[in-house]
Image (cartoon, rainbow, N blue to C red; front, side, top):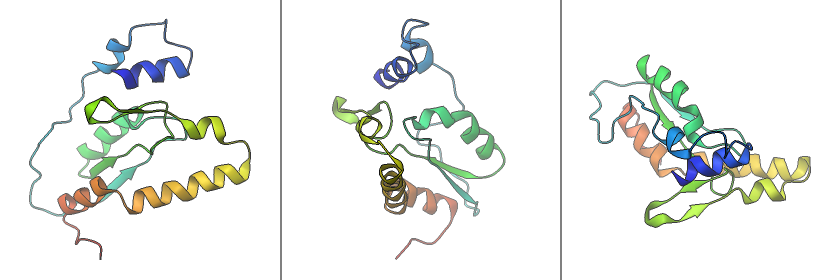
Length: 134
């Protein structure tokens, strides 16, 4: 819920409605769902700069409903709020520091590294039926 609160605050909407309303939005996702054994194409969703993965939930559900395995990821220090187990919260430090095109190019390079080394993405490749990367 802290992620939702920070998201609303970043857009000046923290007084518009409670963060609980946003964080309680129903989805069709399931924790621990068993995939079927067939191969499926994998889509990795990477949100826009300063935005969290949960803003892509509708797109992720639409793609999953069409047979894709979908992995959505946040980028550390590049979204308004990323919660970790144990209560640790990362905020968008890059949003405060990116001042020019060169800074944004560095952000893009960092994002490419995030995707190529994402443990959750490697698990998603396994679920999709793709061989592990070597």
